[in-house]
Image 1: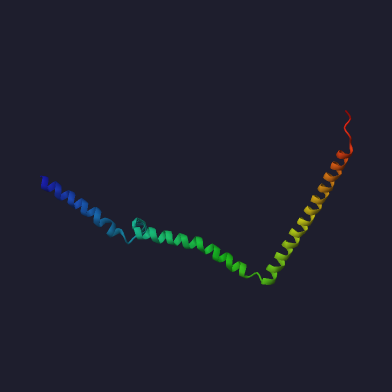
Image 2: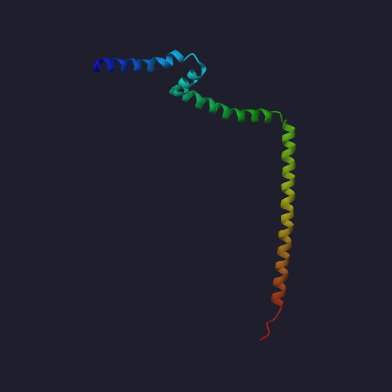
Length: 114
């Protein structure tokens, strides 16, 4: 009896083992087997990395379309804007220094009454 039960268990085990191989022709099972495979994990992570790295490549191709003259003109425009901002700040600093000197002069000319 025990040998009969063991034999039936072994046939169940062998059915479980051969089952996926028989059904491996269907698309779903193949994908399932691939996902369990450690090589699939390495392929999948490499594939996702290449997708992430493709984006900077696209950006560099897009940037290559900009001519050197256009890039120089844009840089020149930005430099002029920054120079104008610095000039305005210089005028503000000069005006504040003049105000400080004026107040110091007024305060020093006033004599305290005791």
